Length: 358
Figure 1 (cartoon, rainbow, N blue to C red):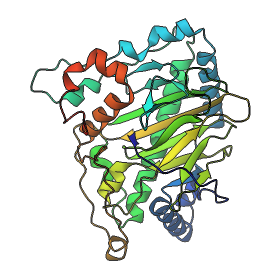
Figure 2 (cartoon, one colour):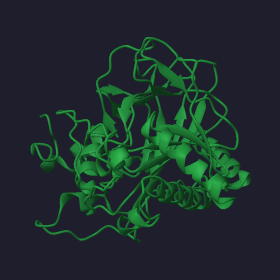
Figure 3 (tube, rainbow, N blue to C red):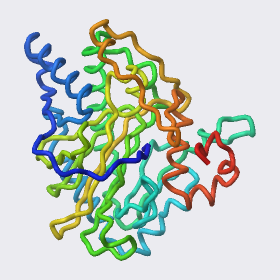
Figure 4 (cartoon, rainbow, N blue to C red):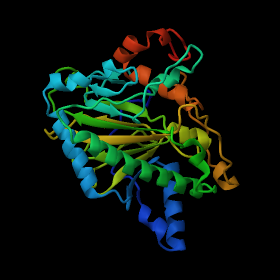
């Protein structure tokens, strides 16, 4: 993710996220055209929207959330056996207030899961971002977690690629336009996240930061939520829209790579998660669709009427956007997980290529 400085929020907006029914793609030509128009408007405008008709069986989602709750109910010392500090690939369990967003600790704990691959034997001339390739860590005490995650991860990847194909079509390209970056070495990551109900003693009691305001740096993110609110999206006038959980839907948002590919026509928007306010823990599962690490984003040619509405790529000098996905990914991990960075990647921390704004 990319952090971003934001002014204090003015309040919550009464607006809601747009809703896009993916099943319409398989109905009449008119319904498909209407879907493309709605999808393009949502991705260009707010950059966040609900999708329904995605085809993920409810049982797959329910099994994943149940296994997630079981994992976080384990004793803390058992969760820490798979701490991400043991992994140079940033995989595994992150305890409360360990991950940082917008320069402050997040009041969440999570389990980071990526593609199941063996670590590479790298030489001094290999790109540093290839250090991210490696195996996951799984808890012995919850054997049902791994199959539940992998089933859901496959489904979420299918949905994300379907949305990406529809976006390409909505922008005047072939539905296969983006596929060049998404071969067997593409990177799809998943987070299992618990936001504990207050009080949380390890972060300031009045901080309210589940996750600080930021943008996602990949292509698309899909978020499976439980029944509790927390995710909020910033509007142009500085208010925030609650992404209220709606059973049977996923929240989808545009990442910075798509903003780069479309010259800013599609929008990677600022969002945050506020700490639970209803006295109950909140669980969510965000999944991120990204290409292979060595992919370089190429701009597509927009139709003239869309190109005229492109806003350009928003740049923050402290958090630059790179066309090279692997570089952007490694910079993000190093910033978000300073303890892992110090333990496994200390040689990179003095290099402005991997520590911009230093």
